[in-house]
Length: 328
Picture 1 (tube, rainbow, N blue to C red):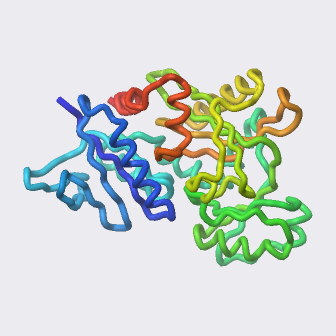
Picture 2 (picture 1 turned 30 degrees about the horizontal axis):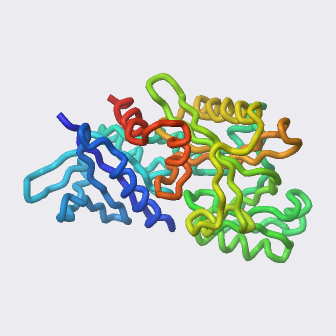
Picture 3 (picture 1 turned 60 degrees about the vertical axis):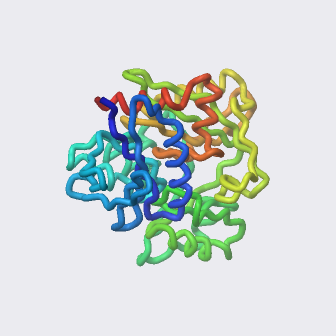
């Protein structure tokens, strides 16, 4: 029998609509000879299944829904929410409670990777990983002294929402006077804000997933943007060149792939993740600086993962099948 798949999208972050576009792409990628997929949109307390021309409310007690053809249930949830509640462990905890397998890492991994500051400090225990210095600011607590921040982290520095699955609220701060407005902007997205020392160099990103017991690392993408940094405008409005495979030395590419595999294993990830890095130093002997880990990477037409899967000579349908069947 075909498994019925919920492609869970939307969410409550600023990237709700991007997530819905990811769901549309996943719908086309899935092997429909093996699976019957439906998109489930989450927006606050409204959970809606698109069942043909019908829009059906989800019964949250068991994630079922009623249609004109009767009650329907799901066998698996493919989570493609960027931000809360799909990228911070909340939805994973719900699916664990009702016993529904899902496509991402577990509650702990999702919660940890969603919190940038906590993740960085956890990973500092692994000497092979290089991370930028950073400070944490919480809403309702006294702000740090601007001068002290600049003395420690330098300028430019980055101010970003600490718990956020999107590119919204990020500022490249060039002057001390711009620091507090940037913190205010980031706090509109998250009650915690991370101020991070800027890493200069070549930005790259590398995806991977698990096929059985094997961690499959995808070709690396080089990110070249005309913007100040790889922000939302660059990411989704075409102001970027994405070069796959990246124009880096084979030895560097091998080290990045090994590091991506190590991070996947250290954290105990599942499903597709994408790790962003900054390469600094002499070409061929660069220092690999960890920038960010994305556990529900985008699947839109402009997203990195579909590009990397194609570059690897793989088929997205097969990759998604590996992820689904790995839970049964």
